[in-house]
Image (cartoon, rainbow, N blue to C red; front, side):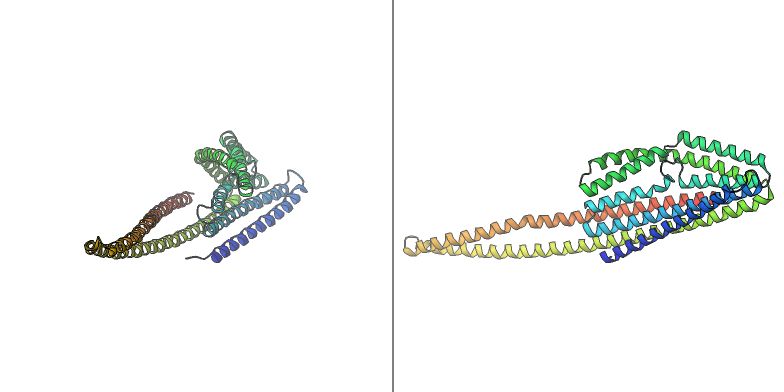
Length: 392
């Protein structure tokens, strides 16, 4: 069974990874600003001018990748915090619910690259790559090919701007975060329920469009290669760039596999804990049942003995001894009635224990099936991602 201190240590490590990722983003932004400042100093329409802007776009692609690492680290941190809160306060506690919702919101952060953007990080990275190849083509004197590539970029941007709901989704996601913070600070979840509904609707619409957007992106990616491979100088550059991107994508997917394995281990520990709790309840109920049966038999024997004594005392009904026995009998009967009442009062406790046992069994069964289903779903998602990678 994992301890609270271990969960806190996992959370602290996740926080450190997030800070490192944020520092990586800051360093990449600083590098891009330098490249941009250098490009602005170049004389327009000369080779050095286009090469400088090409370098700036290449660095911007790296920045998008740094942001992807930051978003992934933030999601991992929120998952660790959720496990910690569930262990500390209980699965159904307010703290655990808020932490889980915050994790779910952070999972979709890469759907929109930055505030108000229409592009996911994947699409925006491709958008930057277009400009990277475009400036390379211009620098090498392939103006017609560069213009052809730029027209393909404009078509891509027009399709995304016309059909994607990136801005609406981003606004709904930010509103959901704000409502979640209000629930946490003011214990008022009414706004959260409303914001969550709007967020779910925007997410559903985004997911509906995403396959079509990926298709537009694939068409643009093919166009990039068609244009780059028309010149020997850019053929090797484009291939090297794509190989590096594939390596990073493979690394990201490997990390996701590791995360899934960690989640599976956590579920296994939780299932083990439920097994232990169920066994404890079974043992407790068994002990209570044996004790109650023994107590009932003992009191039945006492009652039978008292009835026998009553029958023997009937011969003295007209004597003073009869009155003494009658008084003693009433007192004994009252005492045994009290015993019976006491036994009946304990019966709900037994029923409650049995109900708790049944509840624990059901909870274990549902959580086990949910865990298996969750693993199957994640396995299918992973197969889809890997299949997409192979196709790329």
